[in-house]
Image 1 (cartoon, rainbow, N blue to C red):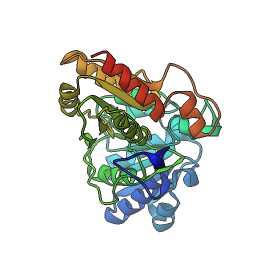
Image 2: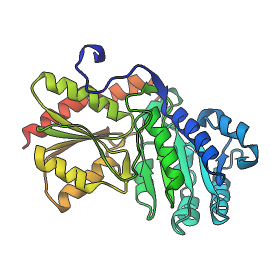
Image 3: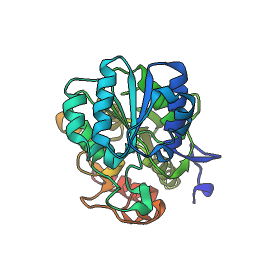
Image 4: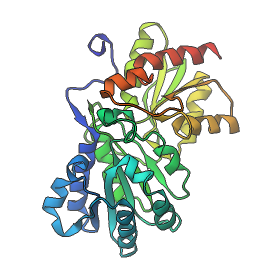
Length: 322
């Protein structure tokens, strides 16, 4: 379907977003000697091997001891280091929430919590590993920045941006190969939404892997004479409320699209902004209060309604409610 649509963004290659983190971390290590890496027995999965090889004295393999890893990172931050921790999103948040809250967020320490294999697209590993609550958990913590980039290039750019950002941060990325449709030389601005496509009929706010699905959905809607505005919310906290309100003031309705529970994530952020400022119809694309299951990423996105076809349906429903 993608090849026959008039897409505003196209791609010639696909790559997993976790590789964007790995390559970004290596470049960050070359630029700043205070960058250190910590991993909980998942060097290959987190793509941290190149950093370990080039900077062995700045890399710490802590083993399957995620809580200890967060404590070590907090201590290193006190000593002026810039620690990047790496493990699966499920273990980066759910398993160590107390340590993050008490040792990192509460004292506003400069720790970067980097989480791979997030969302449904972890795939065959199944529900126990497919955390869909992590964005909500992390955005509720005071001082915490929450970033969910959309492709390899944006993940690499976000990783590099976090070196200069002072304070706790959660960087979420994934396992599947995914279209690379943003530029390699992009400037990543933490907290600044990116309007990718102008539109007048409906605003589509997407994050992570679903930004690409929103780009495809926009082309599908345009074929029917519906002009959607697509905005990439790569930073969920701090939330770019001004960009969201400006877009919806023009279009009059919106769709949120995220690989996360509908509770606690991007959609909730948008809904809160609308409730406080200018109520408007909002449709959610997300997981509807359930756990995941085993399957390929594409199968799971389709089954749980997290794809372009369902974004199109949601956009039409939002428009009908205006």
